[in-house]
Image (cartoon, rainbow, N blue to C red; front, side, top):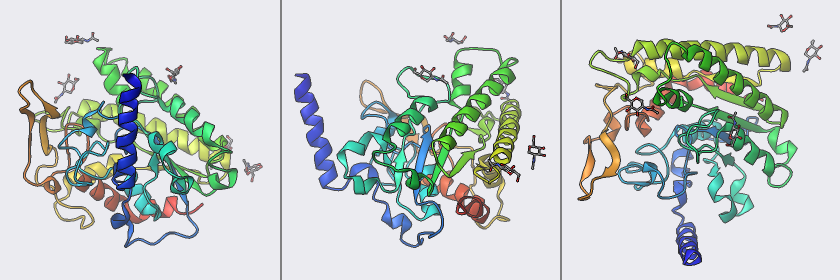
Length: 349
Ligand SMILES: *[C@@H]1O[C@H](CO)[C@@H](O)[C@H](O)[C@H]1NC(C)=O
Ligand SMILES: *[C@@H]1O[C@H](CO)[C@@H](O)[C@H](O)[C@H]1NC(C)=O
Ligand SMILES: *[C@@H]1O[C@H](CO)[C@@H](O)[C@H](O)[C@H]1NC(C)=O
Ligand SMILES: *[C@@H]1O[C@H](CO)[C@@H](O)[C@H](O)[C@H]1NC(C)=O
Ligand SMILES: *[C@@H]1O[C@H](CO)[C@@H](O)[C@H](O)[C@H]1NC(C)=O
């Protein structure tokens, strides 16, 4: 029985490969007006969580594989936690390459298709264990290490960028366990110290450039906002995390004598987009930036198959898709605000 089910899924997978619908990874429409940067990174390796995952969680074990996720792009659920493209897609566009494949699919596509790097990011993960089945950053880096010398050579890595994108699951996990907010600063230090070890390890493995987003203002995620707006208690803790992260990156860059490590300033980019009243033409103006498009239990239905969520008319008008994740338009605005400064720091190897 079990092998029958496996066979069924294999056939499903193969047919989706043949019909080119896999994960919507063929995103040439997003890239066609961007040229390849000849001197910049040629491959992108991604470690992280749902902000960066492009389909590493097996179907159907996550809402990212359920309607209405993916309605904007590729038109159906693709394993991305958004209505469309996510952070990884926009970073690949900035490099002028296609979105790297999700690790889960690596054995089903030809080696040639792995030339843009690989995505190990897995929704729900942190630097420490969060949910039992989710591979933390250490495990994701282990998976990457296992591919070296086989799929990727040392010289590949010297023309590569790594994105290390952890957006706060360690902290939501901490809060879900009802641990004290007063003791959170101690835990924040542990998270950043472990992040430092992860960054060192990726560098020692040979990756030439490593980008680390600062933590976005968690207090402004719809899940944590109230009628008063953003929760400033949470944002103050995020600022502490980000200041420790900056110190770590400065230290690492000093040791390597190169600008190997670069912070992608999500914190300020998110706030800039929220506050934009037209003075930032790069970003769209969102009328109610803290109100998600998909409200309620997004992607879930009750026993009678009725939606446990409501959807806005136009996902492009919303910054947030659900309680935690930006829409494709939200990500587009973030990367537009980061713009040239980000390109300058990442495209120079
Ligand atoms: C990552 O997960 C593995 C397997 O559960 C565990 O052994 C390891 O201690 C975890 N790493 C960290 C830093 O928590
Ligand atoms: C945390 O507290 C909430 C509310 O008091 C309770 O429902 C929940 O079960 C607690 N969680 C844990 C892991 O103790
Ligand atoms: C912010 O979150 C904390 C911790 O959950 C809570 O005690 C506080 O009431 C919240 N503040 C606002 C303004 O919602
Ligand atoms: C780098 O570290 C060394 C040794 O700790 C220190 O003397 C130097 O000032 C640092 N350089 C920068 C640019 O921070
Ligand atoms: C960094 O530069 C210093 C002085 O220019 C040199 O002594 C040191 O070996 C360099 N370190 C690396 C890792 O290149």
